[in-house]
Length: 123
Image (cartoon, rainbow, N blue to C red; front, top):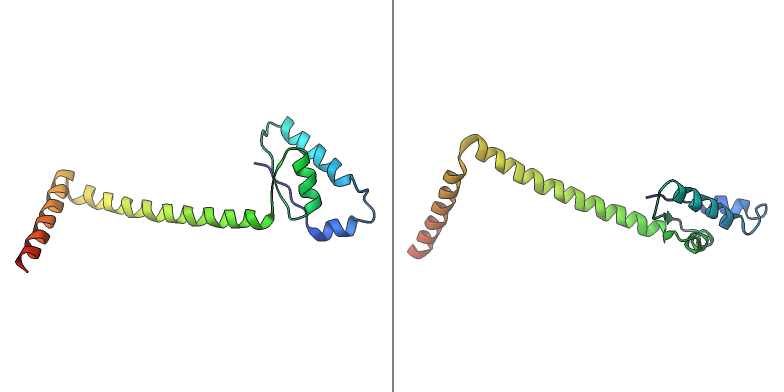
């Protein structure tokens, strides 16, 4: 995934000296170079609407910076949840490996269920 981004202040400071089509020319060369390097899909994250239009016109997928940041944060949360789940299962597996055979663990789980049922029937 390739991305480009431009700050608004840099675009504003160059606005008087850069020809109006300079952004589209720059995007044209950048997109062409990335495709020649083997990037079939080009993603651009910028909040500059002129750059978004130029990149989109040249076939790049355009995201605003705000959406990109929210996607990164969502992915980070999902990744952390996945790690937590793996740690939990990993610890359970270690306890079973170190102390009990799987058949014994299953028998203990069944016994626990039967005891809970017995306690419920007694009340």
